[in-house]
Image 1 (cartoon, one colour):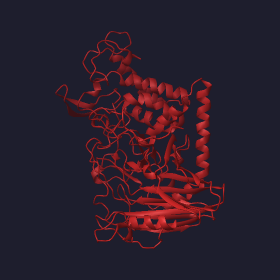
Image 2: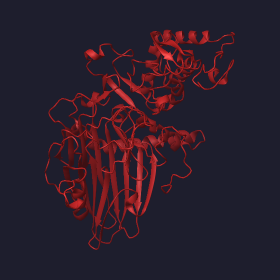
Image 3: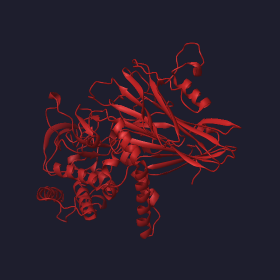
Image 4: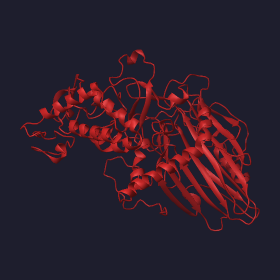
Length: 574
């Protein structure tokens, strides 16, 4: 396992491009669900709480703290780069392990972060859940007290500004979006949690509304505690931070000293600039040589997705748990009951993938699996259905109001589009191999576009002409942008260049669809076959000399829009 040493030397991103730096880790959270990322220094640093909106900001109010005591000594530390010993990090999607070692520490400590994104398990893969398991093995010669606490900010209402990552300020939370936030303690069987809410009792109508449950769960021989509601910062009242009751420093100091949280039972409703937080803890006493697991989970029941146009959808997980935004506890019950099974299923998948790659004489398993990170890191949208339409959204989406799946090409201005066809021609295999239903969704959406015409004209700045949004027979460049109206305003790139003239989209789609059908056994129905033939005819019409290949005759008439190609090319002819 590689030893983590934080250093960004040698890393240089292209100037002006999206850049989170070299220390970022995998995202936690289901496909199309709210997600966050824990970096290689052990800090929560990236946030995809709304599909398509990327925030890169370390929020120090989100962290884990560990404490041990064995009668002769005690220590407490955050699980991050401030640890003071050796920190090692390894990942195999969707699992990340962190190991912490320190001289004279009478234990071995591992923190594992895990999301149940499991091939062919669609309901599990969509869950708005991630787990953290702290595994502790005692190397002490006497009984060892061990406790861990998860501190988590109340992020409800944090509706980030609509902009690309390059333009976003470095600091946007806590801001002034906290009005109505509150939290309360939950105890149910072996589950202890803090239920974060926003205006409880009101119906959930928009993004960043619903419930977040920060919880621990485990066996009857473990102790747990909760401090559900405290101020995430401090106040200028002339008192040391840790002596300001009902604040994060006070709760953290209490845990450092006692191994449990204060459990004051206090809760209140925040005003506009009052950021709140919650914490839960779990602990046990270990005999010499004994191992125990301290388990935590975060559930984000934020059911509504809203794009720039104002059209709203429900996330896919709501098909299983409902759209009310009051189902964090039912999700937590399910997650706690299935935690071990989900983890076994993930290990089984990893072993299957390793056997498959070994059978063809290569050792690329970890690289291939880790490249699937984009499934929950790619600004992903996975929706089950459109929310009830309003007068402002009278027109139904062109591609239907049911289930859709989409990945962003990137978070920069020129790439901020869903399922861009030139990249889907490469990306489809990873989705199709393990989640074929999601790949089917994208291919089906594109098949629907083939006979469409969108006559609305927009300015094309390269040619300085007004051109239609989409012509019949030509597959679009994309299925929309988060800032606009995905699955309705398609071919959204139509501005800088005229994507209707590009000569690589149709054949790239045809080849990808053929391989997808070959891999999965999928059969096209008569209507889909008719549409596909129309795309073939359009492609053949782009052949200017009868050799069956598109003939390039205009600068930028392919997705490589800054590359001049003349005649035939291996790129668009492949």
